[in-house]
Amino acid sequence: MEFIKVTEQKEPFVALIELNRPKELNALNRQLMEEVRDALQQLDKNDLVRVIIITGNEQAFAAGADIKQMADKTAIDMLMIDQFSTWDQIRKTKKPIIAAVSGFALGGGCEFVMTCDMVIASETAKFGQPEIKIGTIPGAGGTQRLTKAIGKAKAMELILTGRFLSAEEAFFYRLVNKVVPKEMYLYEAFQLAKEIAQLSPVAVQLAKESINRSFETHLDEGLTLERKNFYLTFASEDQKEGMKAFVEKRKPDFKGK
Ligand code: CAA
Image (cartoon, rainbow, N blue to C red; front, side, top):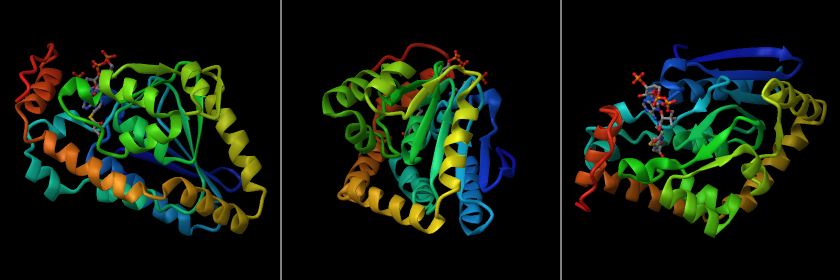
């Protein structure tokens, strides 16, 4: 594992996955997501693990999908690479996953948090879907999950402007379970994990599946539309300009083409 660290038994029955590309603010390249997928599949089969915590570092949970890896791709490249099939496998994890978030959770980072089951946030956490600023849209479930989580008006505002939510706002809009001081977010995530880990793993798994079913009816259809529209932005000059401008550290000049 190059981009994640897995600790199987930091506490009884609780495993920890740490995203570990600190210089890139844990930007989610394809290899990192494949490593997460592989780790989750193994932990799902491991009887000594009942609850999984996913975290980044103090500065960033993750600042999004890796823009440098995508910048020059065409819509057809994106379709053929099919990076989100890995995400589909991640969301099939049967055991509960708690995201412990400090710093940036943006774009794919915010979508990754919303793919988890519960969220403990440090007071420094910042959530957002800023894809619009680089000429594209969320592609890993943001238009669907954020809308279900915080409601249409606020989701529109965040996705159409790229504004961020502070941890307190994220709590207010029910995106996160709890906000704690930055020294405490991992500790609190472990407290929640340990409480769940004492209960029947069978009942916990069935409860998770049932809750997700209520939440995810129609999700597949929504994800498919979002994914296709995300790929379609890669046919525009604006996506090329937006991502190029990010890499070159300048303001993009969008032409509507
Ligand atoms: N992809 C690739 N590299 C990234 C990145 C990303 N998403 N986010 C940050 N980085 C890199 C930066 O390029 C920089 O690398 P260099 O030192 O080599 O230049 C390093 O991480 C540190 O970043 P900054 O210097 O930009 O740090 P900052 O503190 O000034 O700004 C930030 C922090 C506001 C999070 C800024 O980095 C940022 O805006 N990042 C991009 C956020 C974004 O647009 N995310 C959406 C991506 S698209 C997506 O996720 C699609 C999808 O739905 C799947």
